[in-house]
Image 1 (cartoon, rainbow, N blue to C red):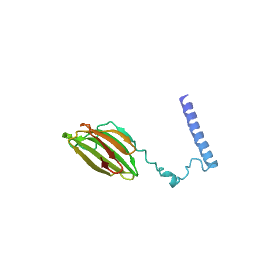
Image 2: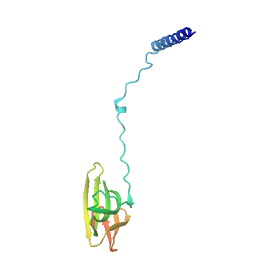
Image 3: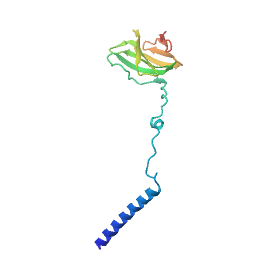
Image 4: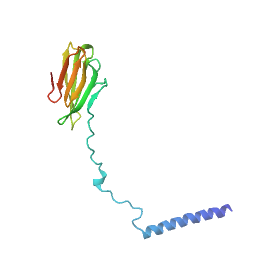
Length: 154
């Protein structure tokens, strides 16, 4: 009985192989993959993701805490540059208010940094933004305007 089942299974496998060979002979292109189109193999160029804009209440900054402590930041686009303006104070002296301005070219990851100091005013905080003009207040309640397009603090 076992021999009969084995013979039947062997016959079925042989029949399957014969049917496959016959189909391949009748359909020569079957089982062949089309040649890849080189233009299709390159990934499509992705558009630049939007730069998040607005005031963010995070205290992280791209400098050691011993040099700069962030209170908050604004970021946005001005012309073809992406800007991030961090407001805070000198890391070891909270009476020295600082702005840290980072400017990124849309085509590169290189950043240009600039520090603007307001000694004696205490920590700086960005209160609001109208376009690229920021309203900033110090701990001593002095209010400033920072124009991100010109880089001027008044």
